[in-house]
Length: 174
Image (cartoon, rainbow, N blue to C red; front, side):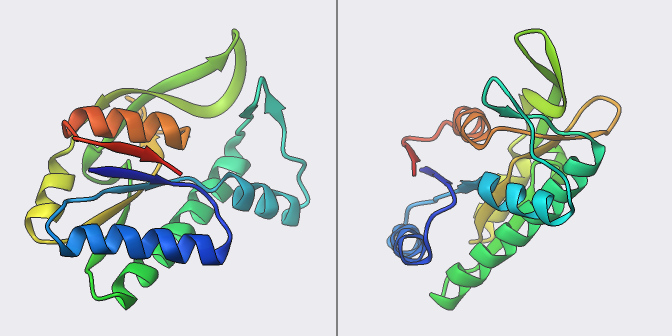
């Protein structure tokens, strides 16, 4: 089972985390893949920058990539806190950890959109290791290219690729 958690209001987020935690407690092996687009936009604005989108995709320059990685890390850790308050061990990782997500540069209709990645490979070993030790993995969609440059990945795309790699029985988008 795999879950993709989008930004949601606090009450909804809490209910979703309770449901995922319950699934874990009754024997399922959920994985959460989260995004953070609204939160990234908020912090980009706080940095005095204007978020730019090309065909619905965030154009991600080096500075925006740095902000995105920090914000997504913060979101992941907040989700870990919510899960752990309910008695389940969780670990927040990025797609860079353990070489989970390999990417190549993504283009929007031939236009350069910066550090936005398209997944080329998923190595789920770290997920199996975490689940074997009874942790609930919480993943932010950041990956590496062949030169170890960081790229932001659409959370839906990351969830789909990870679900295929672990041969998930179910995939839910929220």
